[in-house]
Length: 122
Image: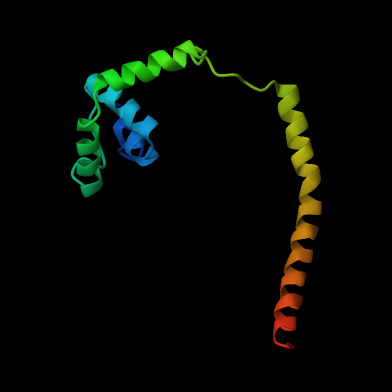
């Protein structure tokens, strides 16, 4: 369903608008081709501007991009997922570094204060 509504009243077209990149516009062109419409941005200036940009994109541009990406191997049917073991290692590493990061942040703030006080001495 290209017009499924999320809990905020937005549709996939609204998500594409918020994405703000050329790739989001290309996705929106595909969604519009399937009958997608703006939800929360339907009667806004941002929505009007978005639809004008969308009208300037030819579907053939989107098809060529998709063909190019597929030719480069970006045609996976499912995303690569980190294993649970790798995720745990990354999480443990992050947690172990937090106290050190807090100490470094404190030192940096102390240095900034000292440097500011030196500036008035010159």
